[in-house]
Length: 237
Image (cartoon, rainbow, N blue to C red; front, side, top):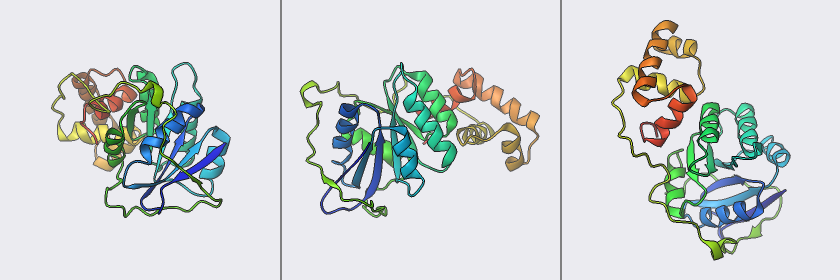
Protein backbone atom coordinates (compact mmCIF):
# COMPACT_ATOMS: atom_id res chain seq x y z
CA UNK A 1 0.00 0.00 0.00
CA UNK A 2 1.41 3.37 -1.05
CA UNK A 3 -0.02 6.79 -0.40
CA UNK A 4 1.49 10.08 -1.52
CA UNK A 5 1.25 13.28 0.50
CA UNK A 6 2.73 16.63 -0.44
CA UNK A 7 2.84 20.32 0.26
CA UNK A 8 1.42 22.82 -2.22
CA UNK A 9 3.32 24.11 -4.08
CA UNK A 10 5.83 21.27 -4.07
CA UNK A 11 9.37 22.36 -3.23
CA UNK A 12 12.12 20.47 -1.49
CA UNK A 13 13.06 16.89 -0.81
CA UNK A 14 11.09 13.69 -1.20
CA UNK A 15 10.94 11.49 1.89
CA UNK A 16 9.43 8.01 2.01
CA UNK A 17 8.09 6.53 5.25
CA UNK A 18 7.81 2.75 5.55
CA UNK A 19 5.89 1.23 8.45
CA UNK A 20 3.23 -1.47 8.56
CA UNK A 21 1.23 0.49 11.15
CA UNK A 22 -0.95 3.07 9.43
CA UNK A 23 -1.30 5.28 12.52
CA UNK A 24 2.45 5.43 12.99
CA UNK A 25 3.36 6.19 9.40
CA UNK A 26 0.62 8.82 9.07
CA UNK A 27 1.74 10.52 12.27
CA UNK A 28 5.38 10.52 11.14
CA UNK A 29 4.33 11.90 7.75
CA UNK A 30 2.47 14.77 9.41
CA UNK A 31 5.65 15.84 11.20
CA UNK A 32 7.89 15.43 8.16
CA UNK A 33 5.66 17.44 5.83
CA UNK A 34 5.79 20.33 8.30
CA UNK A 35 9.49 20.77 7.56
CA UNK A 36 10.16 23.61 5.09
CA UNK A 37 12.71 21.63 3.06
CA UNK A 38 10.47 18.56 2.67
CA UNK A 39 8.21 18.91 -0.34
CA UNK A 40 6.78 15.42 -0.63
CA UNK A 41 6.17 12.52 1.75
CA UNK A 42 5.26 9.13 0.33
CA UNK A 43 3.87 6.60 2.79
CA UNK A 44 4.49 2.89 2.15
CA UNK A 45 2.77 0.15 4.12
CA UNK A 46 4.26 -3.09 2.81
CA UNK A 47 7.67 -4.34 1.75
CA UNK A 48 6.67 -5.50 -1.72
CA UNK A 49 5.30 -2.08 -2.66
CA UNK A 50 8.44 -0.46 -1.30
CA UNK A 51 10.77 -2.59 -3.40
CA UNK A 52 8.60 -2.20 -6.50
CA UNK A 53 8.78 1.56 -6.29
CA UNK A 54 12.51 1.56 -5.51
CA UNK A 55 13.03 -0.37 -8.74
CA UNK A 56 11.95 2.68 -10.74
CA UNK A 57 12.99 5.66 -8.61
CA UNK A 58 14.40 6.62 -5.22
CA UNK A 59 13.56 9.09 -2.47
CA UNK A 60 16.00 11.60 -1.07
CA UNK A 61 15.63 9.79 2.27
CA UNK A 62 13.87 6.57 3.28
CA UNK A 63 12.60 6.43 6.87
CA UNK A 64 11.94 2.87 8.05
CA UNK A 65 9.95 2.06 11.18
CA UNK A 66 11.08 -0.91 13.26
CA UNK A 67 9.37 -2.94 15.97
CA UNK A 68 11.13 -5.06 18.54
CA UNK A 69 8.65 -7.95 18.34
CA UNK A 70 8.42 -7.96 14.52
CA UNK A 71 11.33 -8.05 12.08
CA UNK A 72 9.50 -6.79 8.97
CA UNK A 73 10.80 -3.23 9.32
CA UNK A 74 14.40 -4.35 9.71
CA UNK A 75 13.97 -6.79 6.83
CA UNK A 76 12.61 -4.01 4.60
CA UNK A 77 15.54 -1.74 5.50
CA UNK A 78 18.18 -4.39 4.83
CA UNK A 79 16.53 -5.50 1.59
CA UNK A 80 16.40 -1.90 0.36
CA UNK A 81 20.04 -1.31 1.31
CA UNK A 82 21.21 -4.51 -0.37
CA UNK A 83 19.46 -3.54 -3.60
CA UNK A 84 20.42 0.15 -3.37
CA UNK A 85 23.62 0.52 -1.28
CA UNK A 86 23.77 4.30 -1.60
CA UNK A 87 20.19 4.89 -0.48
CA UNK A 88 20.02 7.26 2.56
CA UNK A 89 18.07 5.29 5.19
CA UNK A 90 17.08 6.43 8.68
CA UNK A 91 15.74 3.93 11.21
CA UNK A 92 12.69 4.97 13.21
CA UNK A 93 11.96 3.11 16.43
CA UNK A 94 11.86 2.87 20.19
CA UNK A 95 14.93 4.15 22.10
CA UNK A 96 15.35 0.83 23.90
CA UNK A 97 15.34 -1.28 20.72
CA UNK A 98 19.13 -1.25 20.44
CA UNK A 99 19.39 -4.52 18.51
CA UNK A 100 17.32 -3.27 15.57
CA UNK A 101 19.31 -0.04 15.46
CA UNK A 102 22.65 -1.85 15.52
CA UNK A 103 21.61 -4.30 12.82
CA UNK A 104 20.25 -1.59 10.53
CA UNK A 105 23.34 0.60 10.92
CA UNK A 106 25.57 -2.41 10.27
CA UNK A 107 23.74 -2.92 6.97
CA UNK A 108 24.25 0.71 5.98
CA UNK A 109 21.54 2.84 7.61
CA UNK A 110 22.76 6.41 8.18
CA UNK A 111 21.28 6.91 11.64
CA UNK A 112 18.39 6.59 14.05
CA UNK A 113 15.33 8.64 15.02
CA UNK A 114 12.98 8.05 17.93
CA UNK A 115 9.41 7.41 16.80
CA UNK A 116 8.25 10.36 18.92
CA UNK A 117 10.83 12.82 17.58
CA UNK A 118 9.50 16.35 17.08
CA UNK A 119 9.56 17.98 13.62
CA UNK A 120 12.69 19.93 14.64
CA UNK A 121 14.44 16.75 15.74
CA UNK A 122 13.41 15.01 12.54
CA UNK A 123 14.84 17.94 10.60
CA UNK A 124 18.15 17.54 12.42
CA UNK A 125 18.14 13.84 11.63
CA UNK A 126 17.46 14.47 7.95
CA UNK A 127 20.20 17.09 7.81
CA UNK A 128 22.67 14.43 8.97
CA UNK A 129 22.12 12.46 5.77
CA UNK A 130 22.78 15.51 3.59
CA UNK A 131 19.44 17.25 3.15
CA UNK A 132 19.71 21.03 3.21
CA UNK A 133 17.22 23.60 4.40
CA UNK A 134 17.53 25.76 1.26
CA UNK A 135 14.87 23.91 -0.72
CA UNK A 136 17.25 23.02 -3.55
CA UNK A 137 16.96 19.25 -3.21
CA UNK A 138 15.49 18.00 -6.51
CA UNK A 139 12.03 16.53 -6.13
CA UNK A 140 11.27 13.24 -7.91
CA UNK A 141 7.82 13.29 -9.43
CA UNK A 142 5.36 10.50 -8.74
CA UNK A 143 3.56 8.79 -11.65
CA UNK A 144 0.12 9.10 -10.05
CA UNK A 145 -1.81 12.07 -8.60
CA UNK A 146 -1.00 12.97 -5.04
CA UNK A 147 -3.41 13.35 -2.15
CA UNK A 148 -3.56 16.63 -0.30
CA UNK A 149 -2.01 16.38 3.15
CA UNK A 150 -3.75 18.37 5.83
CA UNK A 151 -0.97 18.06 8.38
CA UNK A 152 -3.33 16.61 11.02
CA UNK A 153 -1.69 13.98 13.19
CA UNK A 154 -3.80 10.84 13.88
CA UNK A 155 -1.98 10.44 17.21
CA UNK A 156 -2.66 13.99 18.35
CA UNK A 157 -4.92 12.74 21.13
CA UNK A 158 -2.07 10.77 22.66
CA UNK A 159 0.93 12.94 22.00
CA UNK A 160 4.25 11.24 22.73
CA UNK A 161 6.71 12.52 25.27
CA UNK A 162 8.90 15.26 23.83
CA UNK A 163 12.57 14.35 23.67
CA UNK A 164 15.52 16.76 23.80
CA UNK A 165 17.51 14.99 21.15
CA UNK A 166 17.04 12.24 18.59
CA UNK A 167 20.40 10.83 19.62
CA UNK A 168 21.38 11.21 23.24
CA UNK A 169 24.15 9.37 25.07
CA UNK A 170 25.15 10.07 28.63
CA UNK A 171 28.58 8.52 28.27
CA UNK A 172 31.20 11.08 27.11
CA UNK A 173 32.57 10.48 23.64
CA UNK A 174 36.00 8.82 23.67
CA UNK A 175 38.92 10.33 21.80
CA UNK A 176 39.55 8.19 18.74
CA UNK A 177 42.74 8.44 16.72
CA UNK A 178 42.61 9.37 13.05
CA UNK A 179 43.15 5.72 12.05
CA UNK A 180 40.44 4.53 14.42
CA UNK A 181 38.04 7.08 12.94
CA UNK A 182 38.91 5.92 9.43
CA UNK A 183 38.31 2.30 10.41
CA UNK A 184 35.01 3.16 12.10
CA UNK A 185 33.90 5.13 9.04
CA UNK A 186 34.74 2.18 6.80
CA UNK A 187 32.74 -0.12 9.06
CA UNK A 188 29.75 2.23 8.87
CA UNK A 189 29.90 1.87 5.08
CA UNK A 190 29.76 -1.91 5.35
CA UNK A 191 33.35 -2.46 4.22
CA UNK A 192 35.38 -5.46 5.34
CA UNK A 193 38.70 -5.14 7.16
CA UNK A 194 40.46 -6.11 3.95
CA UNK A 195 38.67 -3.38 1.96
CA UNK A 196 39.46 -0.77 4.59
CA UNK A 197 43.09 -1.88 4.61
CA UNK A 198 43.40 -1.55 0.83
CA UNK A 199 41.98 1.98 0.93
CA UNK A 200 44.34 3.04 3.73
CA UNK A 201 47.35 1.08 2.37
CA UNK A 202 47.50 -0.94 5.58
CA UNK A 203 47.50 -4.66 6.23
CA UNK A 204 44.34 -6.42 7.34
CA UNK A 205 46.05 -7.32 10.64
CA UNK A 206 46.77 -3.64 11.27
CA UNK A 207 43.11 -2.79 10.63
CA UNK A 208 42.11 -5.50 13.11
CA UNK A 209 44.41 -3.95 15.70
CA UNK A 210 42.81 -0.51 15.21
CA UNK A 211 39.37 -2.13 15.36
CA UNK A 212 40.13 -3.81 18.69
CA UNK A 213 41.32 -0.49 20.12
CA UNK A 214 38.23 1.42 19.03
CA UNK A 215 35.99 -1.40 20.33
CA UNK A 216 37.69 -1.05 23.71
CA UNK A 217 37.36 2.75 23.73
CA UNK A 218 33.69 2.63 22.74
CA UNK A 219 32.84 -0.32 24.96
CA UNK A 220 31.52 -2.21 21.92
CA UNK A 221 31.55 -5.95 21.47
CA UNK A 222 31.40 -5.98 17.65
CA UNK A 223 31.34 -3.86 14.47
CA UNK A 224 27.58 -3.26 14.52
CA UNK A 225 27.59 -2.00 18.09
CA UNK A 226 30.65 0.18 17.45
CA UNK A 227 28.97 1.87 14.46
CA UNK A 228 25.71 2.33 16.36
CA UNK A 229 27.56 3.91 19.29
CA UNK A 230 29.49 6.13 16.90
CA UNK A 231 26.24 7.60 15.58
CA UNK A 232 24.55 7.78 18.96
CA UNK A 233 27.45 9.63 20.58
CA UNK A 234 27.85 12.06 17.72
CA UNK A 235 31.30 10.76 16.75
CA UNK A 236 30.04 10.24 13.22
CA UNK A 237 27.49 12.40 11.46
